[in-house]
Amino acid sequence: MLSYPATIPLSSRTLNHLADRIRGHRQQRKSRWRRLNPGRQALLALAHLRNGDTYIRLAAGFEIGVATAWRYVQEAIALLSATADDLDTTMARIRLLAYAILDGTLIPIDRVAVQKPYYSGKHKRHGVNVQVIADAAGRLVWASAALPGSAHDLTAARTHGIIDALTSADVMTFADKGYQGARGSIRTPFKRRRFRPKLSRRQKAVNRAHAKIRARGERAIATLKTWKILAKLRCCPRRATAIVQAILVLHHVESPRYAG
Image (cartoon, rainbow, N blue to C red; front, side, top):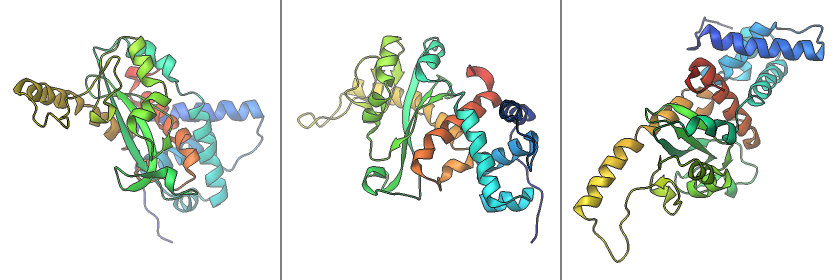
């Protein structure tokens, strides 16, 4: 079998953060011996999350069994996701923003136990729906738990309590047409109605300005998807939430502007 060196586009700060979590967990459980030390296990998990390396490739590269690689990665994900901030905690920082940007994204999956709930008619594929909040510069602030891909963005935002939280905090939030009817502090573009086929010149100007602001939110989604594991999840959809929350924690360690 041929092998070659590879890089992970992350800083040593992120590696040390995860290694410290793993080390503390081992001390708490009084683990006597592991195939990999905390630093190597952290590197294994980051290679899986950031580069999307499969368990077979990781097992060969780290000279461990496939089952051991899976167990080590799942342990790291669980440790990270347990420290992710919930929406209430994050709102303390969001309410300080000039405004927020709300958008939803579909993370593709390949394993579907029940086809219909995870099928998105909008994207014509199976996946899970994740709601993302960004700041005025398009930086990722928070990501929600994953819902089946058939969930509409407005329904998902209401399910997670995002609209009520943003409205209670009086944070002006820009969103696309998928959030029409949200009301509160959510601002959506004007939409043509059945009996009013044309928008006025003023409404078109407002929509153009709105689109320029909302487009920055795509940067947050792009930032989230730089973690290659999210290109297509090859695991049970119920594990998607833990993976997204773990990635959110690592992102805030790497870019600590909105870290807790």
